[in-house]
Amino acid sequence: MADDLTEAGGQARFNETRLYVTGDLGANMALTLNQGQTHYLLHVLRAKAGNRVLLFNGRDGEWLAEIAQAGKRGVTAACLKQTEPQAGVPDIWLAFAPVKKTPSDYLVQKAVELGVSCLLPVFTRRTIVSRINQERMAANAIEAAEQSARLSVPEVRESVSLEKLLASWPKERRLYFCDEFGATATNGDARPLAEAARGTGGPAAILTGPEGGFDRGEREMLRAQSFVTPVTLGPRILRADTAALAALAVWQSVCGDWN
Image (cartoon, rainbow, N blue to C red; front, side, top):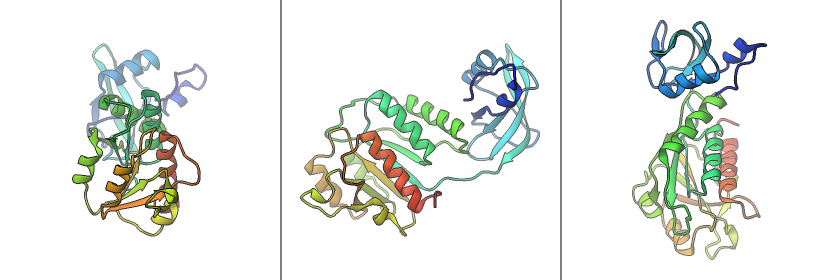
């Protein structure tokens, strides 16, 4: 969400406030904002009737809306005009081994900014984190979408073990397995991600491991899947959160909406 209002140019900055809503948006339509958004507008931005905000829901594009009511009964916003038509993001998923709370928050926020369409927390044998706060992850995804001018919020799925993930994987979706050992592994068949992904097209996903990396058995299990392509991210060992974001950036530059 945008920063607090200032007296100078306050309305102009207020107009940059973007909020994700679940209700329908359209000409002459009005909706009541949720409790969290109401608190933010009334007590942080000190909103008043007549102030304007930008709303999006992932379906109807972005709309400029005017606050019609701001008080104890809540905040109601009325759509004035569409500012952006609905646009999608590339069909790229990120399956990642969760890391400690702060890096996970950072990873989710930046992955949303990089245009990921789905976030899948995956428990591997060396994953240190034992529990995932899916509600917190979803909240981080919404906030990142609001700040980055995205018109949609990525799906945030429940955590799952690596074995279950592979067993239920949609075979038409190519899974790029980021192997930190790369060409030095026993099965040294991993190629640079940019080389492996270039010209492929179709739905895709990236899989990155925990701080301790994948163990040998997991690497062998992954390589046994017909839909998995082992890839490398360069000559250096990257932190878990860095690897996930680097992989998304590489894929976007080759197959996504960066090229």
